[in-house]
Image (cartoon, rainbow, N blue to C red; front, top):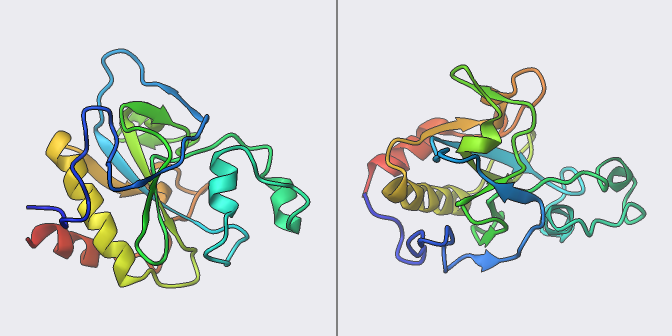
Length: 187
């Protein structure tokens, strides 16, 4: 199983060189002896239901202006991040190296293990619960997942809603799990 050529391998430093690098301060070290066993798929749009703006990057770098949009006042104080963000056009941004613990999962549990940030990689897709994701996003996501699995072959894949049921709904009803698994199985 190979990733698209434009997605570089996941380096020893936990970075994909072909991703646009934007460093987030919202991360720390993984606990000693804690490896990556899970990849969590999220969906985000800032402002809600609007795509293409700088809101997500600003949120993940603590630069979101609470006065720029009415919704921002409720989230600007959050200190959150993800390892990767995939825009609607399939472009890939990386905020945190996979060797570090990004703050993406919040209160969470997977197969009886609490604190999913400790052992997971977070991938945000630009989207929401009300619109389908784009083919370019699935292509990029499958490529990133292939690169992650080259380094962490036994990693599970789930949605944010799976590790925080009742609290989170993303990646939402329009995320096509079968499409993702078919892409991962091909190539």
